[in-house]
Image 1 (cartoon, one colour):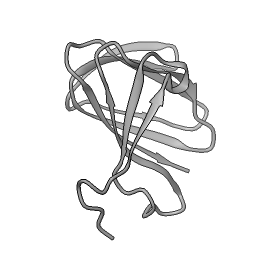
Image 2 (cartoon, helix red, strand yellow):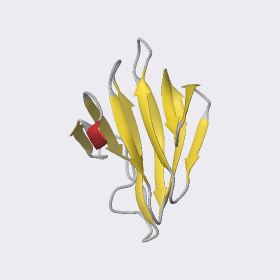
Image 3 (cartoon, one colour):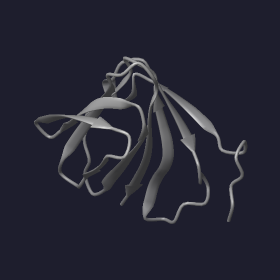
Length: 113
């Protein structure tokens, strides 16, 4: 099943997970995900915006940073990230992300149950 560009719904999430600003989620395959997937989206954070720290239970979230730069919290460790970096947050662990740059931070995100 193909979802054409322009047919992918964009969801605005103000203060996503307690973060700052509004996260823009483009659901690239919404409606076509296998049952073991909860999310497959491009997340765009404008400068200064963030996704608040949260813990995943019974699922794993994968991030691939497409463009921009930011800071992630991986459990209790804070690290700088940039385009080309990737991150996995398995069940029982938490993360948050903030755009610390001057351009949009763009992330491909997938959540598998």
